[in-house]
Image (tube, rainbow, N blue to C red; front, side, top):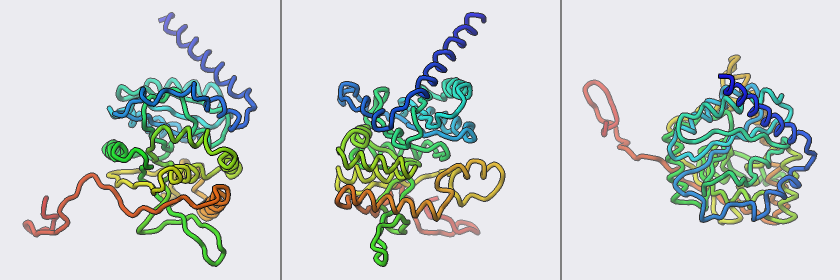
Length: 335
């Protein structure tokens, strides 16, 4: 028992030293990313597994810790998940809180996938797209800490991605459009088309992390700085990067069950409000305006508009849509 306590103390000490070392760094996000952009630090593509994916969960608010732990544990239960990395982007979180979180995550896995806490050196949203040597899969799922997705939907999305590995796959979609009166781009929702997948749930190939963080030269550096300035729009920029690469829009998958705790349309009760109000999208009108500004500035920096519309929604099954009378009830005919 004493040996176990000593081992725990040593682990906590090492973890706290790591956290303090991150806090003492004054590197800008782009300077920080320069070290991970060395090709020698990247795994060889042939060594990356194609039959599993890595989950990258972005975390920031301590009020969401119970929800974050539950979401991470759920992802770990899937045999298709190789590992779960919780990217903690709040350097002001007390070290003891981080140490406790790291321990709780490490013991909460419900499958063979390990759950690890990765404290970030800054609050930059660009850090969620840093290439990481610990990623051993060809595909990654980038997601938020306030969205619960059922595993059947997660696994269906992965199957769709394996058939379309160059595309972005997601559940939550939005659109770009042009305001002809103001002659500027806007961020909106169309009922019949979309061009942007959100990082609430975004599946893509690992290579795009490198392209986002390390490619594109001066224009991409300018756009990453804009993400830091706006504290927003990293997902839109990733859509620009992938659309530029593929000349194609993203792909939307239908979900069986998704609980979005951060959606501002949630009813106001104490439990929901605590989670919801820490999200950027809770300031809805301002949020849309800022994201429209991002699209305009990204277009200017790119020198063109690479975003492309998609019109389809992928579903896991197609059943009979007709209604038949069975007994006293009208039900779907194939039930």
